[in-house]
Amino acid sequence: MPSRNFTLDNSTPSESWRVFQIMSEFVEGFETMSSIWPSISLFGSARTPVDDPNYRKAEEIALLLSNSGFAVVSGGGPGIMEAANKGAMQGRAPSVGLNIELPAEQKPNDYQDVALNFRHFFSRKVMFVKYASAYVVMPGGFGTLDELVEALTLIQTGKTRHIPVILVDSIFWSGLLEWFRNTMVPAGVISPQDLNLMQVCDEPQQVVDAIFAHYENRQLTLSPQERETLLQL
Image 1 (spheres, one colour):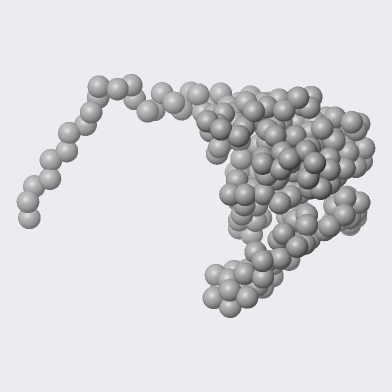
Image 2 (cartoon, rainbow, N blue to C red):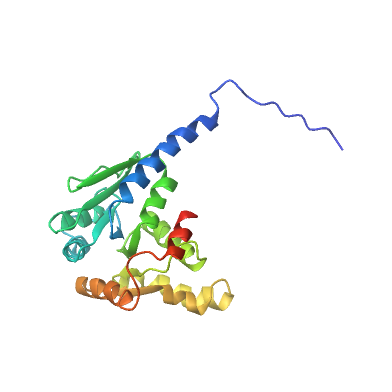
């Protein structure tokens, strides 16, 4: 067997130094988000224009949630994210933006009471998940799907507590849900019960009612076991 020789290139600074940058994002995120409670993470497309019905719907949902006492957390950018922050800022609870530095699409919107800035998607995603009492998912693209599947995976595997995952716009999500039901379940890669991790709403008040219904017979505050689970997230 021929010998294999490897040469390490030490001419550039070690990647391990980036750990300190990553650590600073987590520290700032934990310190800020742990003081904002309760909160709802709202996801959706950055490309949704202001005159789109989904923009107005996201704004209304955020206002209802804010007036119900929930801080609203978005990605801090344009489109649905802007609508969420705009609606929340009109209400009683804080409007929070978790901004990400991107080459395109992502410019911070002007409706953030609290703004955090991230370079890394993974540290930002932890902040979306760790402190949320529910996820509201509006129509969106790959980024929205990424957040949705991340949340479902963490709930399914017990790495985070079971909270509502609400998909808004039954027509938009129908094809994906049909694929889950008719392809993934028969293939055995998810269980039929996993479909119950999500619910679909079309009207803003339905979203709020679904969240309150979930917590009707359970505490909104974290139990000691849930706190321990989230420490391991």
